[in-house]
Structure formats: structure tokens, C-alpha cells
Image (cartoon, rainbow, N blue to C red; front, side, top):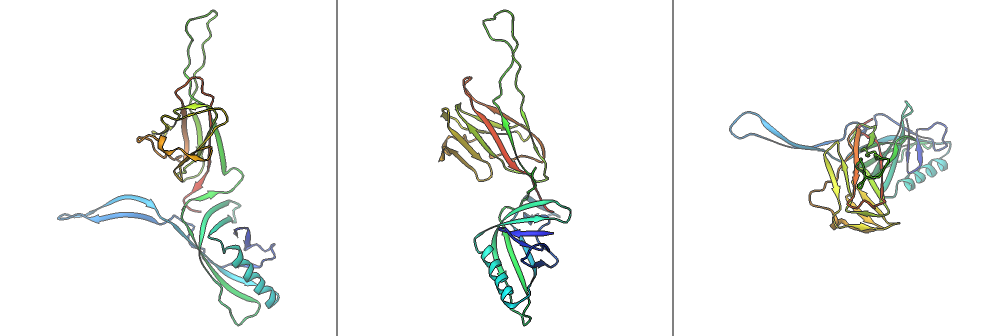
Length: 278
């Protein structure tokens, strides 16, 4: 397994860093589950409430190896500099060739100094506030274009020969991972009261009273729960019955509607597939 922290490579024999991981590597299985539970009063048993994933704690341990004390100290400083920022991007390439991405924050870096002059241990602890392990392969980051739904049929008054217009169908979005993912949806150009629906979950997101013109860009971030029109928040237009909906694992049917037949908007649904564990 090859690991990189903000681009600083560990456990790669072809890399001059000469940092190697020890086992075990903790924190890459199922994330901690937050559970609300209790015992029934006056009878047997108990109950379990809603369960959600908590933050993921990842621990990497290993050794520096070097040909000289000076080179060893250089490696120690380089590792500390690589993860000194609050945000750490953890990239993993497994022995099976799969590539993953985890967004982390640094919790601690311990590098005790030993008597040995050519090697030193290290222990890195990372906190992933987002517990999803994302697919970092070339097919992991995906996007699909969704056009507004239009009904089929004929236009009155009838002209001959009669032309029957085809109706549009929902767009299929395939989340190839095994974790529920919250997408980012970008709508452009003219739209009136847009509604974008995940028919698979039965949830929708509507902005009532919102009208845009050609060149406008509306960005809905389902994960971070923001709605920006040309960079400014338009969250007050969100209806009280709307939901910040996710993409379930597998196929999801996505539908876009607006209130004006002359609207020209299209939506781009973007996401990165993810997993509950490696």
C-alpha cells in the first residue's frame, strides 16, 4: 500500500523519502457508528434510535530510514512541513491497485528521537470529519447533464401533417460506490422556480420565487447545504418542504422541472463515488 499526505509519499520503495509504514493501519474499516439507545422501563429489552456515522480516526505508524543523520533530519522536517496545515489530503493506492481519497485534518504527529542515527519512528493521527472514503480513480469523479422534463404530444391548434413531440425521461445517475453520496448540482442560464428531484429517494429541492437570466450560474451543494447564485447565497428561496437529498448506491432517477416553457436551463449533477471502508 502506497500512501501520500498532501503529496508527500510514504511506503513507496521507488520514492527517495524512505518512509515506510508499519502494521496495523487503523481507521480504514467501517466508520464509528453514533447510536442513541436506552433500556425500556418496566419491561425487558431496549431501543436503538437513528444511527449515523461519526468522524473517522486514522492512525499511521512507521519508520524513517536514511543513509546519514543529516538526511534523516531532513526527512523529519519534510514530513512535518507536509502535514503542518489543518487540511490533509490522504491518498491511498492499495496492493490491489485501487485508489482512494480521504479528506482529513491533522490530530497529531509524534517523531521520537532514538539513539540510532539512521532510523526513527513516527506516528500520525488524522481525523476525517467526512467518514466517506472516496474513489480516486479516473472513473471516480463523475458528472451527468440533466435537461428539464417536457411533456410529449401535439401542439394546438393542430397543423397538418401532425407532429407528435416525444416526452423526456428522467436522467439516470449511477453511484458506483457502496456509500450514500451528496452531489453538487450546477444549473445555468434562464430558469423560473427550478425543482430538481431524486425520484429514487422521493425527495426534491425547490427554489420558489427565483428567476434567472442567460449567463447566470446556480450552484446547489447538497453536502455543505449551500445555494449560490453567481457566488451569492439565495438560500431564502428554498421551500420548507425541500430536502438536501443524496444519491443512493446504484441507479438514481433525477428529474428537473421549471415553471416557464421558455426556460433554457440545464443542470449538471457532479459527485465522487465513495465507500464505507476499504
